[in-house]
Length: 394
Image (cartoon, rainbow, N blue to C red; front, top):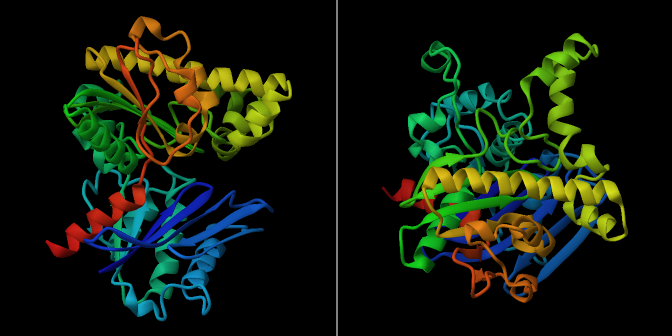
């Protein structure tokens, strides 16, 4: 069964065409920096690859580009879209309606749309991916895999806010958590590697960032909440902020609610601190002596260290921390910043191991470190394909 995986992020599209249950990857690729003039487009098969830099203004254009590459007469991998049995879509926010993978129909799409305000950088892109895929791959089953599903195991003490009870019971205002597909995949890889249902903290660092405390394979807490906007400092999102700042901006500075929302989601985070949203640019500037970039990186690491401390308390111990996603897997600079001065918790990295770049699971902790420090490349596309296949087979 050929399954196309579409993972539409806030500024990127990852895709893979897989044969299941053989777990054979026919092709894979990514479009990142969507919205910029210098979007990167990659397409790889076992025998060929191509890379382009061109403007990709939005996700619709990006997804049409993916389809064109799949069908390309010279380097494409399918002759007809009818070869694809199913398209699996990553959907960020499932609210209280979806705790498992589902087939997409008009009711599902309507629910995804209802949640636009809670995931404004993601759910619109996810739904755009679904709509475009329905047009291009019209004979395929369209399946949604929700980021929020993995976090449904959180206890009430962790997911409930200290606000009037009716807002939970009637309006479903609670912590949902996100990046669940990634946290699930890398935690299972780490547990298998450690040969133990350990106490693990997974740290997903990309344009969006989140952490999860995982005990016996189950999520017990996570840094994102009602929407994927709070918690850690992100590419353009502020993360945790005193809610009084919102009212101050509206009442005293003359902002409208929509303008405040735009500032906190699209103009804050690393972009607001440095003028750059891509960590690669920020690290390069920091190395040149840019003090704003240096401070922003330190702030980012500081927020992560504080959350590690909180999750050690929630877990009552710690066996391993796991770095994953674009920044977590590739930035030795950030991993070093995060793990510095963490020896009280038994966390110490080996600086030489930390510099090694690999697509394999690896340890970067020193021999003296009590806690294992792992880099586990995430594979959300495989996790989505597996869930899609299991749903269709069962």
